[in-house]
Amino acid sequence: MGQAADSGGMEAARRYSDALFELAREQNALDAASADLATLARAFTESADLRAAAASPLVAPPERARALAAVAEHLGISPLGQRFVGVLTQNRRAGAIPAIAKLFEARLAAHRGERAVEISAAQPLSDAQQQGLIAALEAALGQKVRADFRVEPRLLGGFIARAGSLQFDASLRSKLDSLAISLTS
Image (tube, rainbow, N blue to C red; front, side):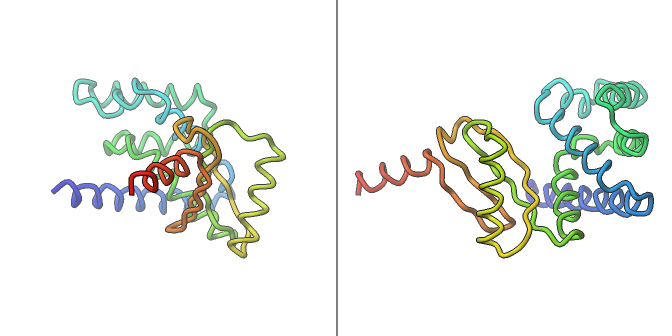
């Protein structure tokens, strides 16, 4: 049942992502919608309180809608983004914002002839490192890359780049795990 519920949740996230994409494209606001979703997804990822408020059955729907609207306004979300958050909240889907953001970015990248790549690094990368990594990935993939950088200290060093089902793993954690496996064999 969990997997069926999850695929239903992803399907709902895809529908909301597609709806926002079409609306933003009609309004020439794809970049603004992308920035809004990235900001909202980051807020949801970083704040357990925000995730709890969005999902709590103890918070009445009107209060939840007001709270999330205030958060969106505080984050500088565009009017289109604020209305989108309102619809998500009304339909009890605000918790899907990170998934919606990821799907939106993939569709936007495809729309622009780019490949969406999620890059996780052990520490923040300098602009020069980011550009070098993007150039290397573009050469490896044979197309322009739209990169989303994240910091994951558990990697210890290096990076992992995910482009759809492809994964480039140059993390120290992976190398240590491989070494541990070869030492025990």
